[in-house]
Image (cartoon, rainbow, N blue to C red):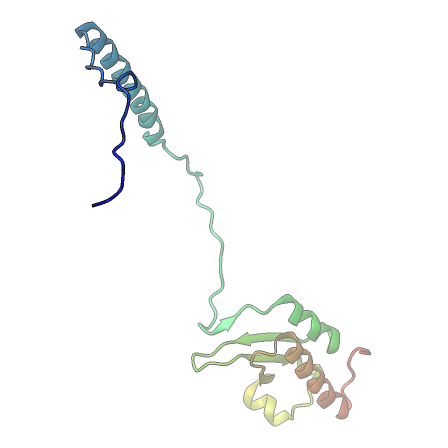
Length: 164
């Protein structure tokens, strides 16, 4: 067996659990009234929060007209437009597309008076678009493409704005 000694608690330290005191009917009624009153107050506040308030609508519906373009046409970042205008001039326009087949196509639209395209080209296509896949190069790819378009135009005698 073990050498453990049993724990002996002196009799003066031993206490007997007190028997529960009976609750009087008046005490219980008062407690019940307090609890129910608290629940009623909470429910009243919740009901006020849950009330649906009518929303006033303007008499004239406001709408914004959005011009529809091809599904793959994407808004051009302002920094890209500014870069093209700085390198080529403000009369050049741009377009950015993300085709379903993937990639990122950036197009510089050359105005007719700045174009070095042939008369036959203008008869057939009626515009001068310079498009390039720029991938994930972002603003750097846009500047690089604008500089190449500038080089192509200036070598054929087209006058552009001064660029450093």
